[in-house]
Image (cartoon, rainbow, N blue to C red):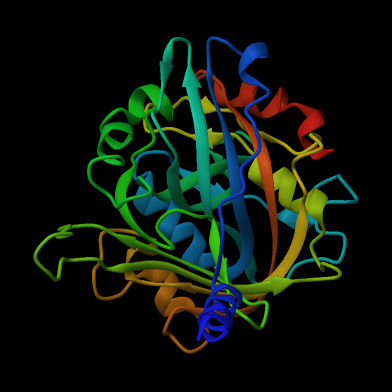
Length: 321
């Protein structure tokens, strides 16, 4: 009987492994006056029709006079070295597990789960400075959206430069993703409109679902993904924030990924039944297959808001290493 119990325990462990390993925040000492943290994230670059990407960005920033930049005309030969599907624009979709968040004497007590959707390489007016439009950002603590996610959500003007943040519901609840016996990794992000962790069902429209495996190669390349990740974020104030990720620490352990991303009704706008990205998918259910991504435990530095052209010019080239 003891051997049977041991076998069952081993089987259970092999079926679902939760990935919560976290690197140390080694950048806080060099950036004491800005927000720093560690981010065990997985980023995917999802090809979305250009008109949908622009519509989502304009809905998020109705007064910003945004337009999409042509990614094929960028001067960096390592930026999308194999090109990008005709008529499509990259949308950066993320799920992850952050920890050791610091801002001067302030610090978040414990980890936070994050899920984000950005439309990178947009520009305002006559400027050609590449910026990222924040479509949605979700946060929760490892035990659910309340109470851990509530404080940073309310305090987003201080911690995240003023970018709007929503309460999220995540699976797994205390890890970057989970891995099953076949080696498939998965994660889920939902919008916690009406959390109900005590008595039963709540209101949680689906935002993002991820199913992915490790890949030997990438059509996009790690450098492209890093460049998209560290593109300055346009803030509601009209200023921008350099939200820079560094991968040159020995604990980053970057891994290429490939898989499926599902963008539900809460991946953009305020819909709970359908959304722009959902309707733009090939089968209109939000499923985007065979997309390339990248996992790593990065060091993150969120600089103070500044002029957008200045932010775009001063992205740290070390973030591409």
